[in-house]
Amino acid sequence: MYASRSYKLVNLGCNSNQADAERIAMRLRANGLVEARDAGEADTLVVMTCAFTHERQMESLRHIETFADSTTTRMIVSGCLPDINPSSLKRFRGLEIIHPRDLDRESDSTEHGNVAAEDKTDFRRIRVSRGCLGRCTFCAIPKATGPLASRSLTDVLSEVEVVLRLGHRRIMLSGEDVGAYGRDFGTSLGKLLTSILSLDDEMEVRIESINPHWLTLLLKETKLSLEDSRVSSYWYVPIQAASNRLLKLMQRPYTVEEFYKSTDSLRALVPNLHLVTDLIVGHPGEEVEDVLPIGDLLRRTQISYLEVMRFDSHQGTKASTLPGAISEKEKSLRAAYVTLLFVHSLLSREPEGSLRKLGLLPINTNLRAPELFKAMRGSLDSGALALTEDSIAEFLRSEITLRAGTDRLEVTRLASEICRRIGPPGPVNMPLGSS
Image (tube, rainbow, N blue to C red; front, side, top):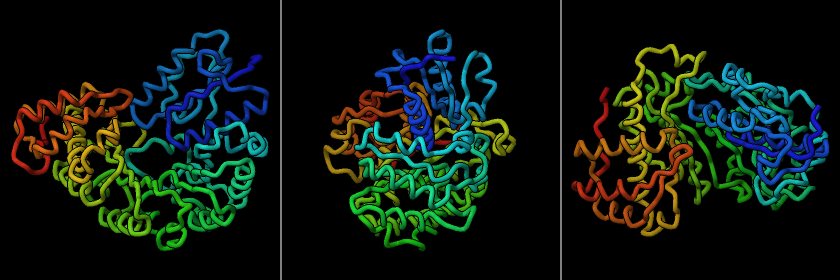
């Protein structure tokens, strides 16, 4: 038995993971623990792991390893890693594992009474469901979450009412497949959103993420709610690929055209739309012709933030058994190509100086900085890169840093190289298909 007095959360995952972390934290507070200033001072350390990519798994393991040998620190490990890669944790002794689904088996009444300790200026994440209805070839997350299990409308509204009474006005609806909410028992996200908006006139509601096919249904069901200024202008709509052939191979239940139609309709309702999406490169069976349309997608949809993920194979997923594996070198090249396309699309539409104010390019990739830089340099050495001189000059002056996983890549050197080899005005061009 531990005589714990303080705790610290280390959250390495998505917003759904953060919602679970908040639930664990509230239970710890209910048992008399207070939050420590940093992990080194805590009696109890809670590591919310992520296993979506190999890099995120390694990051989770590094955090666990840092404190695993401590004889005074109680370590709780939750998130997806214990279910997706349980063997990776066998070398650590004394870990307390909380599987994500275990959190749903306990009453929330204690949690609702302990929300007051949180920062009320941030979004209060409310998990509305766990699991999903999708069967994506590349995703191992269902091993941790199971099939879709939505909370009842009454239960969600009850939690919203409690956090509103405690002073929270910013609420995020979280889950692995938020758009599918209620489809397992006859209700829908649209009905939930309309009900939540009826509770308070000054709240802000954000949907953590929504897949394109669910966005299409939401637009049909509750157009007026989406026009409401209380609904956040930040929308995360992961498309994953810009090719219908590849989407079908990934078992994603929509087309590129449906993504365009739904996001166009959303932009018409939300003029200041902040649109976020994901793209996976290097999925087994992906051809160069599947990658090239990404440039059109970025120009067409005016993406505000982009996540470029190099495909990782996870044991037990359908993608791990598919033919047509892509080499690591080619995956890196394609990720760098998409990164450059996105930089080009930003420079073509942002007013002068705005990127300098931004400080960081709004892009994230699971390529580590040296790999990304090497792939970009490869494009320069091939002589195939073409950007406008004005765009590159602005890029160079901005001295922007580029996020690449947990690293920060200084791109000033890269921009200098591009300037030396500047080509005629035109789109980014990069040779793909190398082995």
